[in-house]
Image 1 (cartoon, helix red, strand yellow):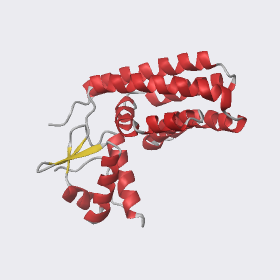
Image 2 (image 1 turned 180 degrees about the vertical axis):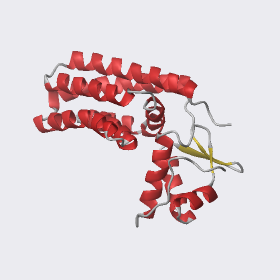
Image 3 (image 1 turned 135 degrees about the vertical axis):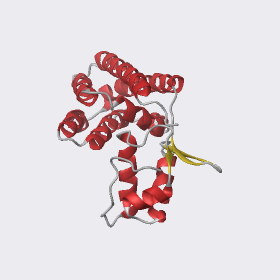
Image 4 (image 1 turned 60 degrees about the horizontal axis):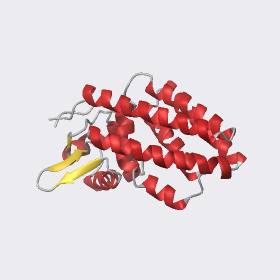
Length: 227
């Protein structure tokens, strides 16, 4: 396998975490393309660690739905088809609108203040060149929003979508200016929740997630699955 841009030798003493971070960022930045085979030997050479932390990192990524291991074939970056992406976004809309309605009633002032800070953080990270961190902040906003509902089952249902949602986020976030636009939309959603306007916040999150789906479809065409 040829060298992968975006991967560099690991210096951290926390090798399992460092290997995970390196691979996560390579997937998020599309340095490892959807459907691309992942060679342990290549990762050993490029990251400068043994197979043990690499296997631990791959296991963690597989549990999150970002890679998959096919018996007798190897490990590959996961694909998410258009139909599956559409279904996931539809489900997200249902869950997040329900979370917003509950959050407008139950969320504390501190929770709302924290959400407003997180809403703007992704744009700051992206402006500073930290694309992987920006993607994490995007995900953190939605996770916090759902947690603010105070509904444990809703939180669990949303958590089950984490892996494939990261795949969608990585591809949609590859489009120019998408992170900045998402950060602005998140800020508007947070402002509506702060004003206890569940109807407006629900409309904003629907529009936001529909835009994410369109960005994903565009990026899916721009970054086709690896052969």
